[in-house]
Image (cartoon, rainbow, N blue to C red; front, side, top):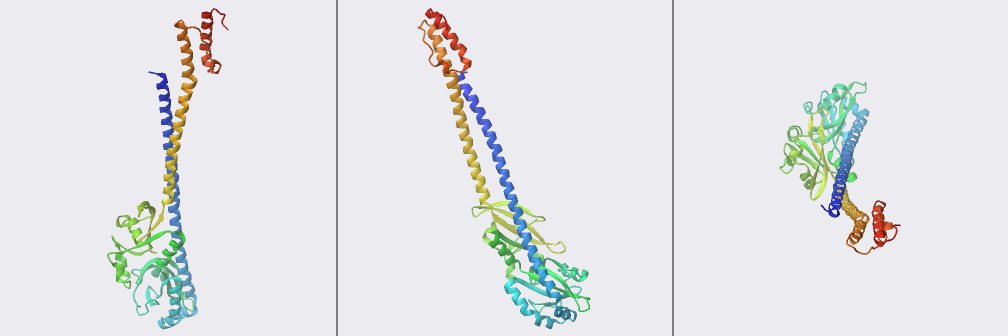
Length: 377
C-alpha cells in the first residue's frame, strides 16, 4: 500500500459517501416539501369547490325563501292556483334564468306533489317522493333545506322553502334550482381549474325524464356515469376515466400527466339530501409549477454535491501532498544523501514545515553538522 495514493483515495471515498448521503436526505426533504405544497393545493381545490357549492345552495335557498314569503305565493299555493303562480312569476323566472343561471323553479303541495314547474308548466301533478327526498322532508318537517338533487329537468343545486297560508298553516313548498354549468365555468375563470361533472346513469334515466336524450350519447358515457358537464372535455378525458371514478366514496387525489403537462386531480363524491350517491365531480389543476421547481431543486442539489466533492477532494490532495508528503520527501532525500556519503545540504524553508516534522528536521541538522565536523545548532 502506498500512502500517497491510498490515504487520499480513502478520504475522498469518505467524502463522496457523506456528501451523497446528505444529498439524498436533502432530496427527500425537498420532495417532502413538494408533496406538502401539492397537498395544500388539493386542499385549496376542495375548499374552492365546497365554497362555490355552498354559495350556490345559499343563493337558491335565499330565492326560495323570498318567494315563499310573498303573499301572492302563499295565497296561490294554498288555493292550488297554478294560473296565478304562472301569471305572477313566469317573467321573473325567465329573467332569473337568463341572468342568474336559475334552471328550475317548482311549487309543491304535500306530501311531495308537483303543483307547477315554471320551466315546464305543462308537466304537473306527479309524485316526487320517490326521487326528491328533500321536498318530502321540507313538507314533512316544515323546515327549509338545500342541497343537490336530480329533478325531471336534470341535476341541479336546490334550495327548498316551506310555504304557509295566510293563517300560518303549512300549504306546500317552493324550490329554486341552479344549473351546475355556470358554477363550474365561474370557478374555472376565477381559479384556473378544470372540471367534469359525472352523474350516475341509472337515476338520471329514471328521474330526469325531461333531459335531452343526446346527453346519453356514447361520447358522454363513462362506465356507469354520464358526463353531464365539462370545461375541457379532451383534457379531462385523460385525467378522469372510468377506472378512476368508478368507486369514489370520499375525496380522492392523484397526479397524472396529460398533454405533456402534470396535473393534480381531485375527485369529489356528490350526494343528495338523503345521502344517496348522485355522481362525482373531477377537478384538475396544473401542477407543472411545483413539479418544475422540484426538478430544478434536484438538478441544483446534484450540481452542488459534485462541486462539494471536487473541492473537498482537491483540498485533501493539497493538504496531504503539500503539508505532509512533500516535506517528508525533502527530509528523507537529505537523509538518503547523507547516508550515501554526500555533502550535507541544508533543508531550505524547513521553518514552514509542520511542527510534527520539526524533530526530523532537527535530527537531520544534527547529523549533517556532525558529518561536517561542526557542533549541532
